[in-house]
Image (cartoon, rainbow, N blue to C red):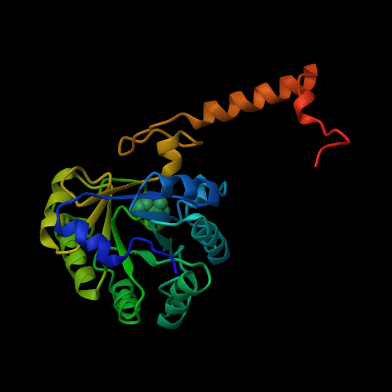
Length: 276
Ligand code: KIV
């Protein structure tokens, strides 16, 4: 039995006013390091689409790819809660298919929870989330900029400004309150102003986890490839803490030149008849 961070642990931190931490991972080696680094939750995001699988965005990610990534992260994670991210159109077409697909993350891939993006006033998704939580699947909401709706939104624009459109502040607050009623254990707030992050966070009694949502939220999430400088882009909402691209390139260049000039393999790399 794994002893990973549970929903109760998340709430204990939240009630003590301790910030929650989440990072993404899509494979075992990165998950092992992210876990050892001490995050509360690892999100096996559909951001794998553009950060791991070579797609332009998250939309092409399939259930099989998402399950395979989640299972790899599950195998490498000891302490953090593993959150599987339902890909575009793996939920919403019917209640039956949505429940079945969410269940596969738990039953087949070892996730401890799932996340679903929700449009402003997203009745269908809110009903699905209510069903999932009734069935015992801890579910994380995700509002604000939701990348699965990027063609509808028209790009990664700041959401929750003003009071007139369906992406406005009132709509985000109402959607967050309905997600709370539906039973979510946390809500991701993406690409909104700091003021909107504060208002939404004050409106609900579930932890909010921000990405580009400012400082007045209950926790933060970032995409690990951006944090590591691993093929990522520099975004205002993110922070690069390492430059792994340069490390990899320099290691590969050194390997190529050592093979080409005969420095590798060296004496210590070759087997002797007496070796075990
Ligand atoms: O897929 C993902 O990585 C996400 C985060 C940006 C919250 O949804």
